[in-house]
Image (cartoon, rainbow over all chains, first blue to last red; front, side, top):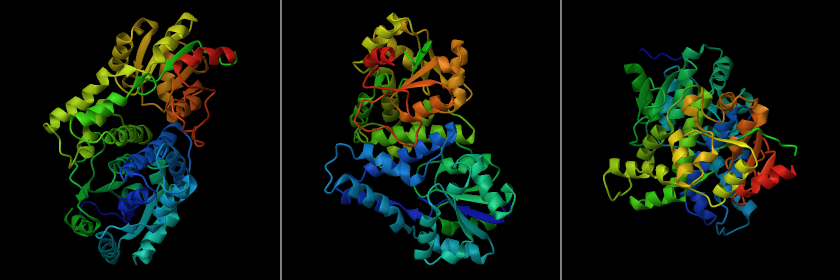
Length: 225
Length: 225
């Protein structure tokens, strides 16, 4: 085992949670599902702009304000504020991908310490894990709300290392988003990319140490590394 | 006049250029126009992630690689490489919004020095201005390709100030994107937001010094400030 983390750090949105129901909520308020993709990319774009330029804001605040633009001119089937509340409320109802609970339980049984680290609120991750019956497998649900800046700045990952009481190199960051892998690698963490689709890893981001098809493939990939 | 810039720095994509024909190119290769919005937001998201974490890549490289994901599973009416080339090639054919040429000419006649500063290639801005007959109004077409990092990091705006030989506070950054206004304000520049739609300015970014409906409204707004 070349990759021997003391603590495994999971990203939350899309890495643990299946965000498809969030797109369904756009349909439920009367607009096309495809707007969810643009909205979520724009949410991260603005959060990263703050991280790059200096400044910060809560994930849910950026999400709410950007809905004003994404939903502008749309024929909603309810009042604007109700539509925004319905969409944002969807984050609390997300469920994990089917590979998550078996993978997390196996990693915990193998003795790894497990935490989450999200650009969103810690409560979202905590509820997601609890609803899936794996809440007790995690020793902490961390959020950049308590860190100097958002991921993918180094300060966010170093905050996680400090909270866990280990060196950055003893952390393995697990994420579906290449930008998260890149930021963790720059900060000195080991990385595992969860490739759920067929899109190859971008050439312009630091490559992951491991690539797996789901969280349930991670125990084997670590053992084989 | 409270806002008295020596040099006016224009963002390029969407601030000077009308990007609607780029969405049309998605339709021309056989996929929905709405994919253009998600693709452009994701392009900036990944560029800003590099700026925040450390690292850099060319705008067009990120754009090409992200098309692999955005176009995955789509039924293109031509080969994948041809579709990517057709979409990326669209940047070179963009034209300015109708308010741009009159506004730029008036600002130049009023004695302001004018430059552009783009996260994309300088050649795109140069061709856009030349095709619109306002190429000679600009003294330089600057790109972050020659700066330490992308906008909205301070280093990108300070690069522009250095190239122009003026203090950051003597520059006025003109942009349609709130993230650009924020970055420029953090770097010490004065700012003018071009509000072409009805979406209000986000609360989480530093507010602009001036707000105008188009470039042709900027001379009056400066005189009235």
